[in-house]
Picture (spheres, rainbow, N blue to C red):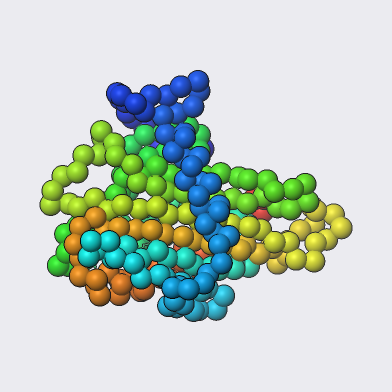
Length: 253
Ligand code: 18C
């Protein structure tokens, strides 16, 4: 659902909408499928466990492109008492973002492509002495049903895109992001009547994947230190926020 009035972007050239599909629909489909494949891949050579905290495990692979750190990152976590739908709902919806995101100065929706896909423009906090970063990305939420018995998989993908309403204005540097939050809901000791499922019976298995290119040179050690500190901090804060928000609400399956 879209809660924010948005501007419609004028598109010229190749990305014109056809037959009810928005102009980025093919892009969204491709990236969603890539994430679904990638998240199932084994964590083998090259991945380092850089942080472990309760059930949260943070892995990183050190990769540089033209001297710029672009380390892929994967976090696995398991959260008691919430569903995958709830996690994805709070991660995707604009209205909650500034309540859990601590790395932003601002966020806004500049276009709604459909009910499940919007374009965000965000200004990130500046890390002194590097230039301030901004980002512009489509953000898509989706529910994928696996079988009659299993709970569906929920996911959100945030993927960088250019936009006429978000020109790059130096000294800001545009970062490039490809992020996914992929969630499964597990029901432990399910009661005979599904209506009797309580929060204590549910658990969300979460995978968070990020490919971030800072968009310009930053000292490698600085990026790696900030990342090692900030990703676990984000997930700790975000998951506690969702637990807090949903505690006394009916379960959103
Ligand atoms: O996924 C997250 N948030 C989503 C909604 O906002 C969305 C965000 C995508 C962009 C992620 C990249 C953020 C880089 C921010 C740079 C500034 C960091 C400021 C920290 C200061 C307190 O999908 C949650 C995102 C959690 C981000 C954790 C920080 C990751 C740092 C990655 C390194 C980037 C280097 C940038 C320059 C820093 C120089 C030292």
